[in-house]
Image 1 (cartoon, one colour):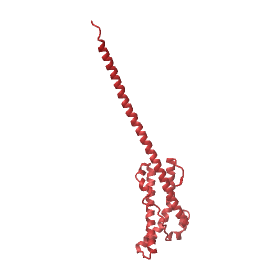
Image 2 (tube, helix red, strand yellow):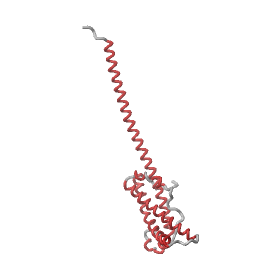
Image 3 (spheres, rainbow, N blue to C red):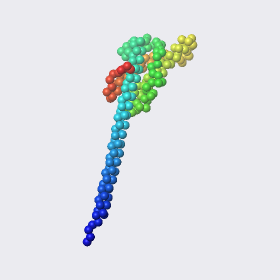
Image 4 (cartoon, one colour):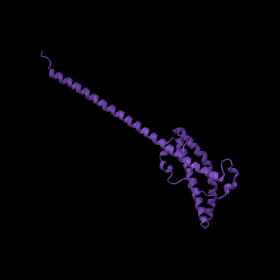
Amino acid sequence: MGKPDKSIEWRIANLEKSNTQWKIAIVSVVLGASFGGVSTYLLSQNQQATEQQNIAQALFLDVSIIEDHFNSTLEDLNLNLNNMNSSEKSLDMIWVDPRPYYSNNGLYFGFQKDISKFDTNLSADLYSYYLSIMNIEYKRQYIYNCVTKMNNGQNLSNTEETYMRMYSRTIIIEIIYSIPEADKIKKEIKEKYHLRECNIFC
C-alpha cells in the first residue's frame, strides 16, 4: 500500500483552515452588525431623551412666563382665590390688558406634537392647560377689540356689549384658576426631569 499523498493532505489542511477563517469572519460580521445595531439604538434613545429633556425645560419656562403675566394682572386688579368671591365690583368692571397672554408663535405650537411623547398625565395636563390659555387669550383679544372700538367713538352692538361684559368677568376667574394648574404642571416637569426653578435669564 502506497504512502498518502502529502499534497492532498496539505490541500485538505488549507481547506479546513480556510473554512475556519471564513466562519470566524462571518461570526465577526454578525457580531459587529449586532453591536452596531445596539449602539445605534442606544444612541438614538439617548438623543430622544435629551431632546425630550430640552422640550420639557422650554415648556417649563413657557408656563412660568404665562403664570408671571397672570399674576401681574391679578396684582393690578388686587384679586386672588381668597378674595375673589368678595370682590364683585372688581369682577363686574370692564377692564382690558393690551398685552397678549399668548401669541400665535408660542412654544406650544412648535412642540404640540412632541407633548404627546410625555407620559399620559403630563401630556393631558399640558394640552388642557394650553387649551385654557388659548381661550383666555381669545377673550382678552375680544375685550380689547371692543374697548378700542369704543375709544374710536364707535358704538357696540348689543351682542358685542353682552359678550364683552361676560368675557370681562369670566376671564378673571379663568386666570385665577389657571395659577394652580400651572404650578401643578411645573411640579410634574420638575419631578420627572429633575429641573431646577429657572427664569428666562438663567
